[in-house]
Length: 281
Image (tube, rainbow, N blue to C red):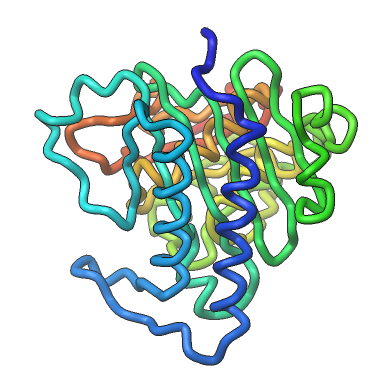
């Protein structure tokens, strides 16, 4: 399909959101509040959301937006949104509060319930993962320094690294959540070891960084059995998808879909490019 945006215009929006997040990150007072679902909300979440929502709506006024930090419209009002932004202004707020650097800015574009483009930006590390249908996925380092030079896909080829970066591994490497490890995940890892025939090597990470590591090929898979919402995965799935990997439901192996009536994701598995599906439990 022809993506109705140029993702090179979205990268600066994500990077500037990261700059605003870092201003709060480096301040003593993060102004932490708690939402109804017991998840944290900081001043950085709010500032990032305000900037991203304003910027996307200004540049793309005809594309609606679904954000974690904005009350979602009723399904009857958005069911005919064929193309939309799905945004998490600060994914990994718990890691942000811990100041361990493992948080991201996620901007995904979805068309017909499928991610077709995405930017995941890591403010502390100044690294972006960018993907778009038709030209693949890239990792870009030192974004704040080179961002103004990125005007086209050719510039991503010049300044970025095409994903995946790594190939097969001698041992099975699995990304697991730092703050949301579920009992079902431990059971899955045990079953995976039995199928694989040797020990599984878990790597603990926060936020959408796990999905980016899958896209890189650094880890083989990321099983998620805890609760997630569409804004937690849309951008990350775009990076995996256009690096050549897949994200599938854990139970029936069907793809995830977006802009559903219920915005909660089913449990899922994110698999690196070329991963051998036959070892899955």
